[in-house]
Length: 217
Image (tube, helix red, strand yellow):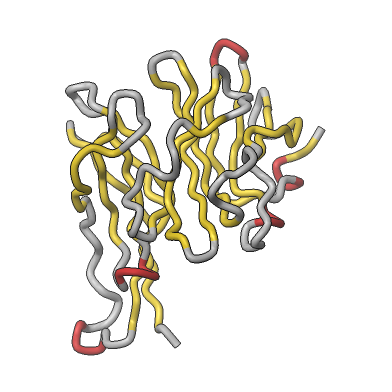
């Protein structure tokens, strides 16, 4: 049995499973976050968010899987009776992107349902999350990375009903806060936009995200 402080992960995501009276914790495996040889994604279970069992394997890349590093920020969402994992992946010389994996239960094993990411292939993207609109249309909301565009932004892309591909073109959802310094002093600076979430606010959906401004050296 582990305590919360014993678990070494980043980007934690908790899925409550009422039928089991359990919480499932997914996240970026801490020791492998930056290595070029990621082995997969794991999960832990807990009845109380304090005492945990695990780690257990949720995803192991199949032979020929396109990515070998930066297995980041997994989230698991229930949709039409199945469990879908949204996670970011990358390979040398290939843009990072969010791919969708599926399983019959929260334990997995999760398997890819498409050939590569659903985010735009020539965009550096990460931290995809799932959203279903008032017309029951599925979307992915993700970050277009600062490493490619300078000022990172939140984007949304309509998904096919089976979640295997994007539909149309992404739309920008970003409403970034005011710069921390005057605009005439922004030359050479970047704005990182990371790890978004969605919440209801006064009848509308609000995208919350972290923005960090820093000096590129």
